[in-house]
Length: 143
Image (cartoon, rainbow, N blue to C red; front, side, top):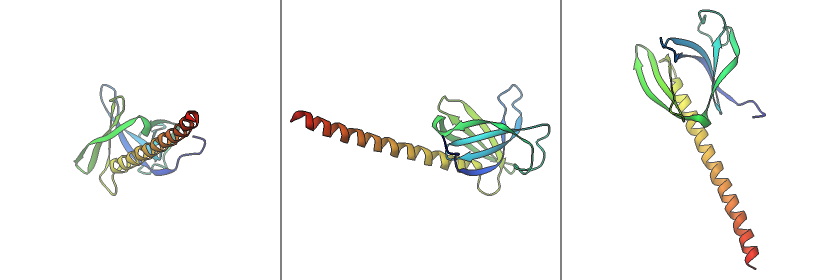
């Protein structure tokens, strides 16, 4: 994590709070190669529609792909896309966004698949390298 992750998308999403009232709260979301960062709006109302023009907190909650299982439950209602991010622990986090352009759920799902595929390839390479190394050591010992 020494280098900053490449930003794939930056914009507004609404996240359903986990509290008793389950209110929708605007978040500035930054999708990277490593996961999704959620920034709270500083002050009141969430102002404006541009994620970069509003006052956003520098602290962010990060939903890392290594802890994410899937993007699920896509529903389209009244011009909004509703979807759920399911974490490996089973925790479900609900989001909604306008149904314009490429939907956030599709971009998050594709980035998650890309991440999981890269991890699988890396695991396969490591396994191949370790078995090749162990195999050569084993042959040397037999002589």
